[in-house]
Length: 610
Image (cartoon, rainbow, N blue to C red; front, side, top):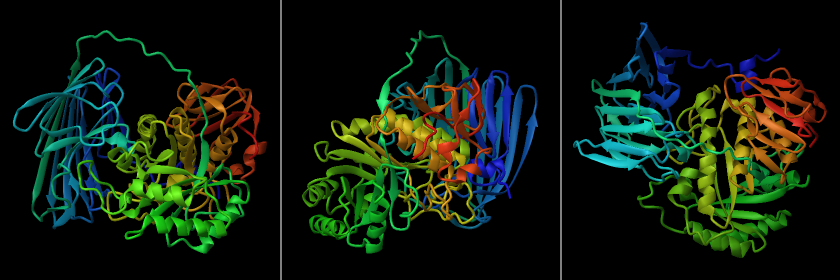
């Protein structure tokens, strides 16, 4: 049976939330379920999103249940009334949004406890865009009425840049924006830490106890008012377009027990293998050795369980690896407690430090380069960058579904990756930057008890089992992420795994679309390339080829950069299940191409064998 387009593109036929584009005079926005997206004034985006997510005790997101809505619309106004339940009926909600063409948006939220329930957050989250906002002045009115002049962070802020918010006023390009908050204490965080392309003003300060109870019969009421208007004109200098050329990073495959495929194709420079010191299985080491027998190199991430002495553990691990014929070229070790997240001013774990682990690595693996950093997200690296004189390289990973899991939000994280990687590059200083697993799904949960189960393969936050890993979206995401890593000067980046939840191969050894993206990216390792050379597309190009992705949800028309190539699309998806598809897929390209959502173009000599 042929797969439908949604399964090919997104790995699931689960329908997304209905979308409604609204234009009221100079105001435009999109309604998507209970979320207001991309509020714009005369074409300038001023609010990235307004929603009311409900977070459970592990920061997972409860989906709405029994949602119904009514929309009243006139020529200059719109009113949305949305009723819903959540958490198996434990909570009843009413969301109302009113918008007027004069530049006014009012949102109100009422949540009523049907029975007692525990939450980490329940209420409004307002997302500010980054473009036109980063580094710009911001006036804050605090809950006591006191004004404060500050600015949106430009480098990614490891801690909350603003606390105790009652109102905000700022400018986005030619637009004045004023926002008032009622019903709860709000504060702001820099969501670029988690690769969200936004700053978030949210309710319930993180300093307050959590989880907290919404009791049966209790009612929570909040309001947000947004006022938009034309700002006085300012002089603006044109920003030159960069044609900087950069070198491609090595493409790695993340690996751990159960993620390797020793007898199947290996389109990468090497394995980034994660082990738990003292608990590594001989079978895992044998699988790694067989996988690398095809010529790949080994990098190592080592987790040290609580109570482990780093020196003895690393010496023992080096011996076991040598006996298996494995000699890693890069090694980082980290105490298991550092797989959790802590605020910058919080008490960090005692016991061996990351720097002490780095010293143990240098003694046990004298021929390897030693890493420092985190095995989770950039957030944790930014909050504890470590001693800048320790190690030869710095590392971290990313996930695109920490806060939201719809397709648009996942693809928006690609806007944040260049800044995330640039800030990691700044932290690294004279050392190298070698990125861990950069993926859609989440490998581990630093913010709660564990990952969210996802047996039905739906779009869900904080899960390793993201359905889009099987689809075109994962391929387009990998191309764009690799381009951002190259732009930041990263030496290496892991973009997937051989098999498993982040696999490039399915359960029958069939190639997923991301397989071909990695094969092509690996084929141009160490080449000098131009990043994002074609407007509307993400990727890289060089003198004789290009790998370009439509990392969006609308078709893009662009000139063909070379006369020959092929497109990874629903039309070629069946043939592309063959790992060798790319070697013989190239054909003539028209002068102008239309790439559908999440399709990938391999042009010139990018369409070649492994």
